Image (cartoon, rainbow, N blue to C red):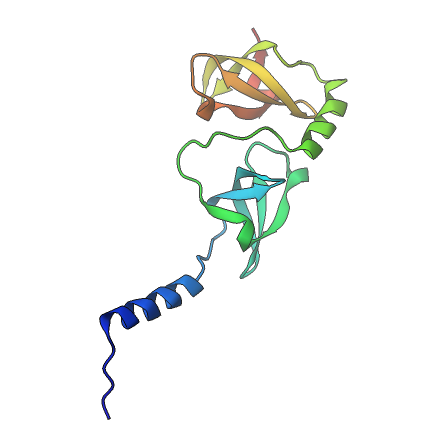
Length: 154
């Protein structure tokens, strides 16, 4: 006995099959991850299981590394990604650090970017001697988090 399958039934079957397959991510992938209600770029450090990955949120210290489920990963991060404001728990820790940090929000500094110095403004304190900076004359996609080793007073 031969069974005929219509084109639309075949397309539906193929769509359902492919929809059930979720992308597998690999160590080193740069991904977008839901963290505290916003989406942040992160790097996969370890595949803990087929559905869980340990990530480091770009620009944040290892203390904020987290094992996340695949549903929190929104896809591959491509190009420069504009970072949302730090989550409330990071801001709270940064407030403590701000009491003793060398620089304050609004300070103008020079930042080493691949061997060249660029003028920047401290826009946030994200930890002990860790700063979110904005390069003057450049768009927000170039903002980044840096430590003291890359900063010189202006």
